[in-house]
Image 1 (cartoon, rainbow, N blue to C red):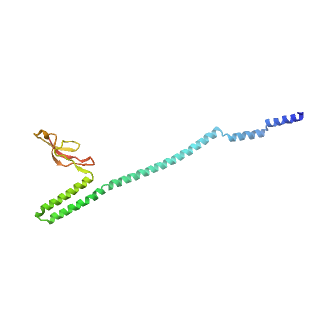
Image 2 (tube, helix red, strand yellow; image 1 turned 90 degrees about the vertical axis):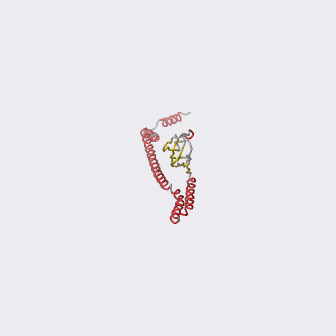
Image 3 (cartoon, rainbow, N blue to C red; image 1 turned 120 degrees about the horizontal axis):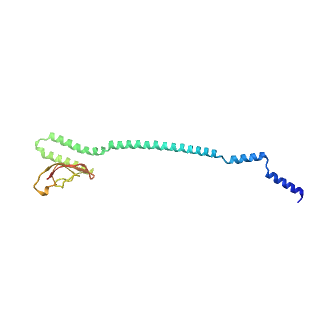
Length: 194
């Protein structure tokens, strides 16, 4: 190779290796612009965390309001249900009440000879009422001659008896007890043999 071409080649290499101070400053600024400093990174993380916290707060407040509305609505529905729960039962009792009114009217208009018809009418009303209660799950507790059981019976008094088979058993029922769907709603008041 000639000296001149070697010299040109050497100058080109030096130009590429050595950059002017302006080119070096420009290159450093580009590198700095591409890589944020640690402070900028932390600031960006802080901003992202604040934004995420605000979003979470809004979601929390929305869910809290929604739950509060649900709670209020549920309480209102529950109070309405309690208030109107007996409506069906009372509506079904009205025909029995009508029958009692007819019986009262019939007794006031009848003479003393119609006692048997009045008894028959009252028995019909009683049977109708018992049937209604049974449809609603209410049944009388059978107590007569049964073993005394505190789950079903309430001892009003005890009565001494000589018969060993009557001891610890119900001798007399003062007031009937009732169960509704196998739950005691009124205990039988009974006299127990001792």
